[in-house]
Image 1 (cartoon, rainbow, N blue to C red):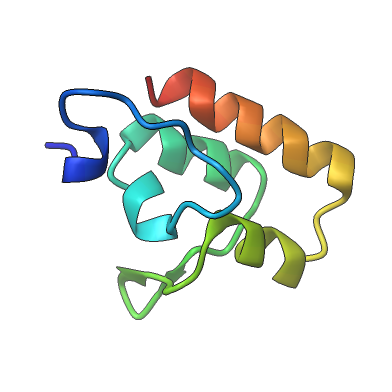
Image 2 (image 1 turned 30 degrees about the horizontal axis):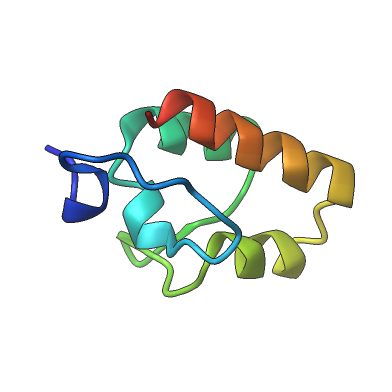
Length: 76
């Protein structure tokens, strides 16, 4: 079941979207795993935004945009 973030109307994922909301979309988890992003700590989603995670993990700007576009594509 999706969190309230994904119920009824889809809200666009941005770099300011909390990881907690993104992991409520199963396909979003797959996107992040495909890009080898670390977003789980102690069995829980980290308390950060997508943008913070991408910055902390030194993801190149071009790849950041690809990840964001893919997340919005699969989590509709």
